[in-house]
Amino acid sequence: MNYEQMNNNKLQLIGTVVKEPVYTHEVFGEGFYETVVAVPRLSEQKDYIPITISDRLLARHEVQVGDRINLVGQFRSYNKIDGERSKLLLTAFVRDLLPMDETVSPNNIEITGYICKQPIYRTTPFKREICDVLIAVNRAYNKSDYIPCIMWGRNARFVQNMKVGEKLTVVGRIQSRTYVKNLGDEKSEERVAYEVSVSKINPLDRDSFDAMEIASAEIE
Image (cartoon, rainbow, N blue to C red; front, side):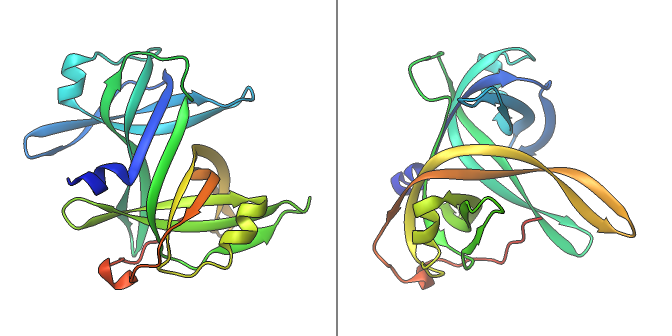
């Protein structure tokens, strides 16, 4: 992974482990586990964020339910085939575990990428302005991560006029939210969505979008 790919997706979370790590898969002899970390907001609420961590890190840092951890890494996406649909799964990929530091923000992410779907601007019943943006971020081995972002207020008004292919850097935090998915035939299912709540936008030079191949991605 080159310097740019290391720095176009930077994440730090400080939170409490709320699920036992569960083994999920292996890549080139390296095993990976998944768990969930509860990260506090300024309010009394918490965001429950899935994380993926290597067995090599776990060999040096024991991680159990109730432990508070300080992790750095990247916010990544994976496509999971569900019937005839492709479902986008998101996880915080842990690159390292650091000593606890209460002076830093417990939830901070900065990504640089390309708008890969036309932004969707709307207002709430209380007249709050919101814009949903899907950003594609380059990763090693010709892969990309597709990160759902939500902008508010002036940022929402600004980004609604940006075009597919434009490059930008955003700073914010990862948030989780529960919603009810209508499955038809009077059936519904409670699900959890993850997205970056953006506090700062920095538009970058408008390089050709052709330099990067963006595969179609769907978010449910």
